[in-house]
Image 1 (cartoon, rainbow, N blue to C red):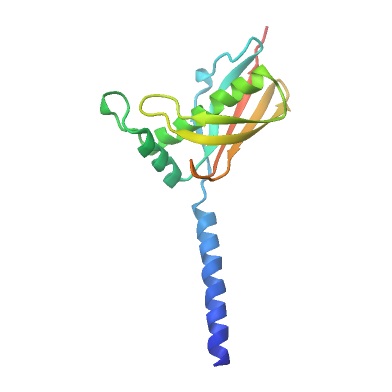
Image 2 (cartoon, helix red, strand yellow):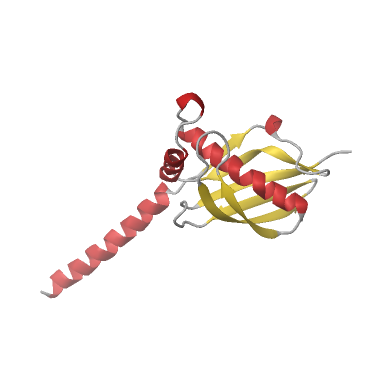
Length: 161
């Protein structure tokens, strides 16, 4: 009887560890979106670098894509398009908020930009640190009822006079 109890405990602990490892393994890695040519002015002294890096699970990106729905003429975006749409949607308001009032930490509410519906993704906590002639930003969304965990990294360049 005692060995059956130990077996049940070991099995339960093993199952919990496997679930944790599976969740960690399915966590998203950072994917690059955008192009350096896509950057543009944000304010008189600052411009978006045009590229972002995003960490979002396939499941979360697909869920957001379903909420956005079809775009122009019924076009359905790919998973990569959904990811990058989220990255741009986070980077744009974060860059603008920081350029208006530069500070190391702030939060922004984010809605998807582009064609289709514009679901609210929630509030992102952002930090911007100096990196030479540019600033490096990271915005993180903690999983809630609006969306899963999302992390977006971006750069803000000083405009050369």
